[in-house]
Length: 91
Image (cartoon, rainbow, N blue to C red; front, side, top):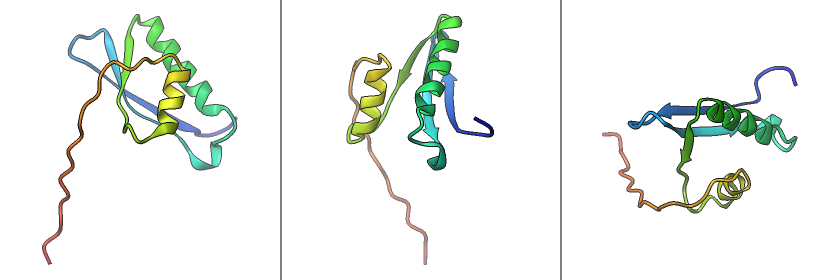
C-alpha cells in the first residue's frame, strides 16, 4: 500500500505505563481492505514493545468502534457520561 492510510494518535498518561488512544481512523478511500486491523496491530505491537497498556474511550452508541476494540482484545472497564456544550456564534 502506497501513501497514507490513516492514523493512530495516542498520548502518555500520568502513570507513564499507559497510552491513551485518542483517535484512530482510516481514510474513507482506504476502508474495507483490512488496513485498519493492520494499523491497529502495529500500534498495539509498539505499545507491547514498550510494556505499555492502552486504554481507549468511545461513544457507547458507536457499535462499530466497540466491535473493533473488542476484537482487538480491549475489555470494558468503566463508563463515563459525556456532557456537550454547544457554542453558538453571535449574530
